[in-house]
Length: 163
Image 1 (tube, rainbow, N blue to C red):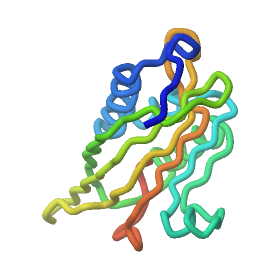
Image 2: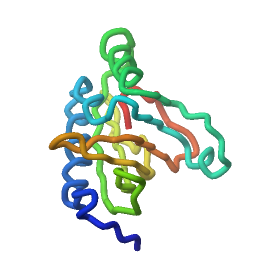
Image 3: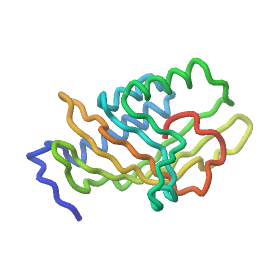
Image 4: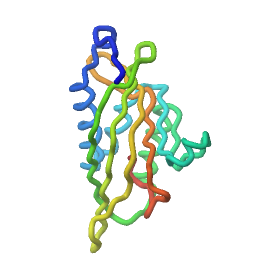
């Protein structure tokens, strides 16, 4: 288990847990306009398969470089895209600090996302782990790098709402 000098980062595991829960709650509530606020200005955000990560391949179904790209994706999702109405529930567990990188904390967490479509039984959309760099920006935590690495061989439906 990695140990991180918490006085250097002042980011506790409980604070990370709250941060992940707040992000998931925004997505589950379809408050997509709030999602970019969880990132620093020059953040990267990817939703990428474990297969690609293991083989060192960069292709990711969702890849955003900078908060502006994340905001653009949210605007396209909420104002331009047509998709079947759905609701998501994010379940996050195993939040842990895995190290540090300068002023950032490396963290990982497991995730399970259940998707409900109209007139269908809820199904697993995605299962995997988050591998992140998280920094403190003022009083709040923000992602500097947020990778949602899914274990699924494929994504059953469309990736509409961020993971």
